Image 1 (cartoon, rainbow, N blue to C red):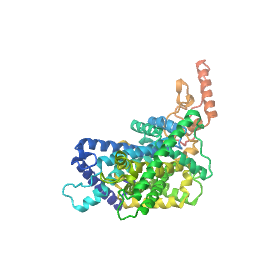
Image 2 (spheres, helix red, strand yellow):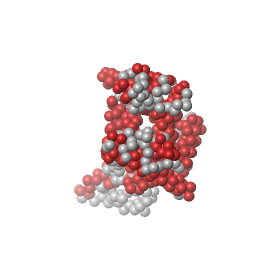
Image 3 (cartoon, rainbow, N blue to C red):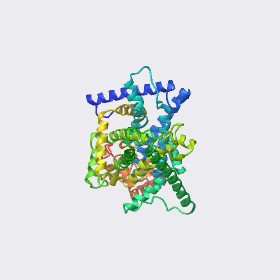
Image 4 (cartoon, rainbow, N blue to C red):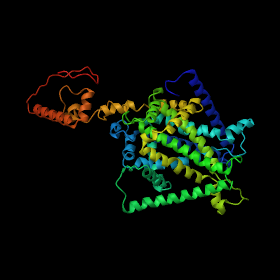
Length: 526
C-alpha cells in the first residue's frame, strides 16, 4: 500500500487488485491440486505446490536483493557494520572489484531458471478447466496466463522490490539473502552468459569511453579461463539465435497464426530492445538514488527523471516505477515467449533437421530465455551500471518512466503495495535514512554514520577505563568530528592518556565540568 496515499481511489485500487490476486492464487492452487499444470499433470500435486512456493520465495529474494545491492553500492559499508552485520558481510564482497557485475550476471540467469520452475509448476495446461467457470474466465485468466502474471509479479517480484528499494539495509540483513547472493555468484562463474561482458566492452569502445577497471588486468590462466567462457557463451547464444530465427521463418513457434513471419522477427527484436531499456533503467535508478543532486549532472532529461523519481510522492515513484516496469517486462516476455518457443509435433519435420531429442529440449523454450537474458537484460544492465547518469539522460528513458508510472497508476498490481506493507510491518523494516541518513547528510558529515552507535574511541567512550571528565555523554557532533578528522581523534586520545597518567601518579589534574542540553547540535559549555 502506498504510504501516505489513503485517498478513496487508492484504497479502491488496493482492494480490487488484492481481490484479483486472491482469485488468481485460488485458481493456480486449484489447478495444481486437480493436476492441470505442466508439472502436476503427472499426479504429484503436493510436490508441485512445494516447488511452486519454493521458487516464488526464492524469486522474491532475488528480485529484492538486486535493488539493495545496487542501491547500496555507493554507500560505504562501514556505516552499517554494527547495525546490519549480514548486510555488511554481503557488501564487503559485493563492493569489491567487479563482484557487483558478477552478481548481476548470475542473478539474471538465476531468475530465468526460477521463473521457469514457477511456470512449470503453476502454468495451466492447454485443456485446463476449473469448477465449471465461464469460458471467458478460462480464456482471460488461464489461456493468456493472466493469473500467473499477476501472482508472479505481485508475490514473487514487486512486493519485495517495493520494500527493498527504500529499505535496502533491512531487506538483505539475513542469511537467506547471503545464500542467494553467493548462489548468483556461482551461476556467473559457470560462464553460460559470459558473452555479456564482450558486449559491454563493444559498447564502451563504440562510445569512445574507457571501461572502468575495477580489478587488475587478467593474466595467464585467469585470462584464458575468462575468454574460454566468453567463447562458450557466444557459441550457445549463436546457436540459439540461429535455431530461433529459423523456426520463425518456418512457422514452427507458438506465435499467433495471423502475424506474418517477418513481423514476428521484427517484433522479437523490438520487444527485446524495450525490455533492455527497462532492465537498464532499474539499475540506473537504484544507482543514482544515493547520489547527491550535483553528482546527477545537469542534463534536462536526467534532472526531470530524477525529479519524478525522488522528489514526488514522498519518493514513492521509484517503487511505483518498479511495479509499472514489471508489468511491462512481463507483458513483453509473454509475447517474446510466444515468438521464440518452438512448437514441433511428433509427426512434423524438426527445425533445421535437428535430432528429436534436441527438438524436444528446444520445445521447452530455454533458447529464447537465454537470448533474452543476454541480449535484452544483462548487457543493458552492465552498461547502465557503468553509466547510470548517462542512461537517464535520454528522452526514451523519460517516456518509458511515464508509461510505467501510468500502468502503476491503473492499480492492476496495487496488491503488491498491500503485500509490501504487510511484509514491512511484520519484518520491522525501516527506511535506510534512519540508519545512514540521506546522501547529502552523509556528505556533509564526512560520510559518517547517522545512527546512535558508540564509537571505539577511548577519549569519548571510556574504553579501557580512559575517559575525559565530563565527556562520557559528549554531543554527537563532537563524536562525528573525532571520527571524520584523525588529527582530532588522536589529540583527544592523547589528552585522555595524559590525564589518566596524571591521575594514577597522584597529580590530581582537575577539569571544569562540562554541561550541555543533550541534543546533537547543542554547544559544549565550559
